[in-house]
Amino acid sequence: MSVKIKRSFSRVSLFAMGITALTACGGGQGGMKIGDDEYAVVTLQSDSSQQSQKYPASIKGLQDIEIRPQVSGFIVKLCVDEGAAVKKGQALFQIDPTQYKAAYDQAKAGVEAAKASLETVSSTLENKKMLHEQKIISDFEYQTAMNNLLSAKASMSQAEAAYTAAKQNLEFCTVTSPTDGVIGTFPYRVGSLVSPSIQQPLTTVSQIGDMYVYFSMTEKQMLALTKSGSSIKEELAKMPAVKLQLADGSIYNAEGKVDAVSGIIDQSTGSVSMRAIFPNDQNILRSGGNGNILFPYTINDVVVIPQSATVEVQDKKFVFVLNSDNTVKYTEIKISSLNDGKHYVVTDGLSANDKIVVEGVQKLKDGQTITPITLEQKKAKFQQALKDQHEGNIATAFN
Image 1 (tube, rainbow, N blue to C red):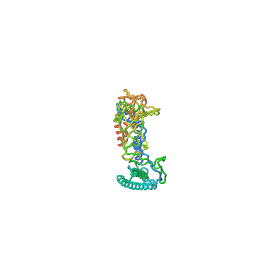
Image 2 (image 1 turned 90 degrees about the horizontal axis):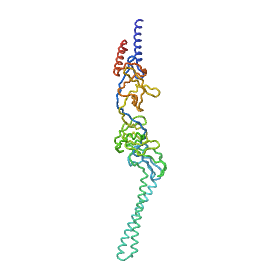
Image 3 (image 1 turned 45 degrees about the vertical axis):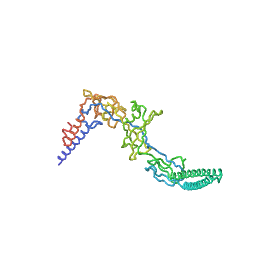
Image 4 (image 1 turned 30 degrees about the horizontal axis):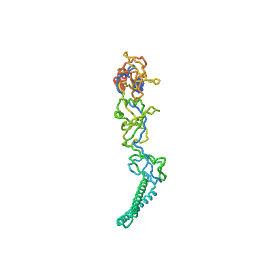
């Protein structure tokens, strides 16, 4: 019995040692390396790289319209809630209409009185005219009757103007939205006394069917986009679609289009203000928000390498270049400040057809001789080793 237990224990120990040895063959940052001197090597090629530049941006509605009262009075009703979507002409606030209703009724009565007076004066003038033609009354008396008619017509016009003003003031007691949009905050509530001269508006209505996103780029960057000699309109039409990164880091689901460039360069910052327009069908974007514009561009004839192929020393990047005699050279490179988190765009230090080690670089030294293999060979050996290990072929798992 003890012999069987000892043999089983030996198999388990050997299997565990195999796992440890297999793990130890991994290379630095780049994963497992099969064989003591075998390293995965790739031949670099010139390529183009899609990049994007990030610019801080502010989001605005097509219109942010301040809503102010046109009559004075106490607010008696809030017809909508903050943040509500409203239609043009929809009631927003109700101001106490009592005094304006009284003035309206009085003006309406004044119109009726002026109308009656005008009809009386008109009838009198007709009679005076007939008597004047028969030489029964004097010219003076007839002229007086005509003057009375003119005066009655003027009084009628005054009464109608007063009626129109009173009617308008009564209508102003119901504050309505001038456009479709979304309501802002309410600094005044029911019971607040408001007037046309209040410091803050009652609220703001923002048109958010489409949204403007404002951002700035340097004069040099703008010139690189617009120096072809075409008109600004033609240059804007050729600009690529831009994306919007929201405040939470997510990318907005619709692309925007740059539609305006400021004609003035800010002397204090050397920047140029630009504007992009984005659709906002789902009302995700709100006026006053912030984000980042992602402006795409393409870099041609560059070398792109995986980040796992680099070693960083004091903020400098290095790679191991394979020489013709299979020794590696510790080589400093320059990279673009922009990257996708997985690759670097090399701006200096490497060129097409150079060969570099892409995995296990942390274990390499300058001038070391290696056995270069391709990524496909490395992967095949790795899979075979796992297979041998799984099947218990410990003797062949590390050949």
